[in-house]
Each structure stands twice: as C-alpha cells, then as structure tokens.
Length: 478
Image (cartoon, rainbow, N blue to C red; front, top):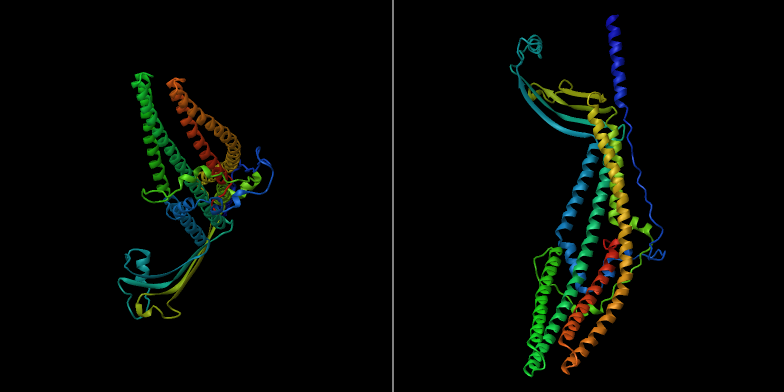
C-alpha cells in the first residue's frame, strides 16, 4: 500500500511538472503598422505611376540599354544573390522533408559473444535456437529491412517551419529584385556622369585654345608697351590652371568608365557613348502615383514584409518547444543467425512499432531563451518594416522636390551662361582697345568657365534625379 501511494504521488508530481513545463511565458510583442501619407507634398494625387514601366521603356539611350543588359547578365553581386535564392529554395525543401516521415532501408551483419557470466550469455548457453544443435559461438546476426520515424506535427511546429522557410525564400527573391533596381540606377547615374565629364572636358579644351590665344595677344601688347609683365604672368597662370583641370577631368572619366565596367562585370574597356547629345537629353517625366503604391512596387518593402511574416512564424515554432512532442518509430524486415535462414517465413520475420511522447522538463530556461530571442527578432523585423516604408517615402519626396528645384535652377543657370558669354566677348573687345583692365578679362573668363561647368552639372543632376525617382518608386526590377 505504501509503495502504491509513493508511486501515485510521484506520478502526480511528474504530471504537475509536465503541465508547468508546457506553460509558455508571456512576452511583449509589437504589431507593425503601415501608415503612409495619402499623397506627396510636391505631387498631385494621381494613381498613374512611373514605377510600373519597364526599364527598357524608361531608358531610351541604346548605349545605356546595352550596358544595363550586360550588367544584368554578368554583375557579380547579382549572381551572388541568385545563389542566395537557390540556398533559400533548398531550405524550403529541407523543412518540407522534416515534415514528412523519414523512411530508410538497411542491412546489418554482426557477430557477438557475450560473457557467460552475464544474464544474456547464460540465457544463450541454456536456451538453444535449434533443439539438436549447439548455438553458434560467436552468435551471428543478419538483418535486412525498412525502418521509419515520424514526428507527428501536433502543434504545427514543422509546418510553420516550412512556411517560415518559404517566406524567407520569397524575401530573397525580393532582395534580388531590389539589387536589380539599385544596379540599374547606379549604372544610369554613372553613365550620365560620364557624359557630363566628356562635355566638361570639351569645354576645358575649348577654353585652353581661347586662353592660349589670349596669352599670345597679351605678349604682343607687352612688346608694344600697352601692358606689363604682370598681365602676361596672370594669363599664363590661368592657362596652366585650366590645363591642370583638364587632367583632373580625364582622371575622373577613367574612374567613371572603370566603375561602369565593374558594374557590368568586366575588365576596363572603353564605354560606347554619344557625348555630343548630352545637352539635348531631357529628364524623363515621372509620375509618382500615391504613397500607398510603394507597398507593392518597392522590392525592399516587400522583402521586409516577408521577413516580418517569417519572424512571426518563428515565434510559434519556438512556442511549440514548450509542448510535448510525439514521435512514432517502426521497422519491418528479416533477421537470422545464418544467411540461408534470412528469408525463412514466418520464423525470420521481425517488426517493431513504438510511440514516444516527451515534454520538456529540465531544460526549460534554454527553451525560454530561444523563445525570447524569436520574439526579439520579430520586434526587430517590425521596426525594420516600418523604417523601410518611411525611408521609401522620404526618398521619393526628396527626389520629387529635387526635380522641381533643379528645373528652376537650370533655367537660371542657362541665363547666367548666356550673360557671361556676352561678357567674355565684351571684355576681350574692351581689352584690345585698352578700355578694360586685364583682370576683368581673367575674372570674366573664369566665371564663364565655372558657369558652363555648373550648367552641365545641373543637367546631370536633373537626369539623375529622374533616375532616382524611378528607383525610389520601385521601378527597374520588372
């Protein structure tokens, strides 16, 4: 009676501990919001969106299109992202395999001679397999059969793991799309920078010719005592400065070409381009649509959304570790102590079937830590999702404002260049007739050169702003 009471008390204590082990701790969670303004500050509320256009429709320069085509095939970073997609796809298959029963085939051959002073050895000595024959010494064992094991997914732990892996696979696909968007944008901006540098170099070389002629004129005037050696030295210094600027621009051209070749996944080579048409290039008109469309068009937002959904499932997976796990194992086949008797039926047939129900009891702190980490990762994913949306909206708003301001700036700089070109002509004429000081000619030429540089720079910024809006809206990956 006492033994029975002790057994009942022990069973009740174990049951109480098991129930307590199944209880999950409460953790603070965070729900990710998707609040976005209804419109952009500098745009009208129109559903038309440039991001829906394919990049071949957005970019019309055939040289740029060919460069992008090469990069999409050979860019190393893009090819690395393809392998990340393959890894994520394999992870889905791994999780799917864990959800299904594991079945295998096996063959076994062994020989064993236990000590006669043990229970197993004494039993084999006393009991003969065949009544008139002594047991083989050592006793051999041959087996062939199939075995299976299956964890019954009571709490959807394995199923959620498969869904989480599938969501992360989708996230890697969106990550590659975002890489494509950024790659196309970077190639386009570098290409327009290269065209701008070519035009700036052409202006510098033109100014070198003009300044060389001006220097010769000043030298003649010095010989006729109409000016001094100071004027000659100032004109010569300006000429050397302009030549130095030429080499600086040539270096930038080389670096920009090499950067484009790097993005295209190839070693340095000349970039085919039509620099003469740069001044005729106009920024592609863009339609921003409404901010809510960013949730569908931006690959990085969709990537963050998939990662958030996967992190939520990871919490459920970690929670399932607190609950009992049911595993069923079994096997069937043939076994005998002689190969000739292996397939003798029914004597040589064997089978087994077992079920285990195990609940965590001792390692509860470790399970709680895993559960807490999964919850923290989910909170991080929620904040990352909100930050990605906010960043996307700010990028679009900045670039839309940039387009408007650059348009006004380009118009003003165009007028500035026109005025300074006339000033250069007037100052040269006055200097020849000794009605203007040489410093006026120098300052006017310097200002005219800087204004032409600024005008080209502003045009490049306009083109890049158009590209950046296209990227910020989520275009380029389709």
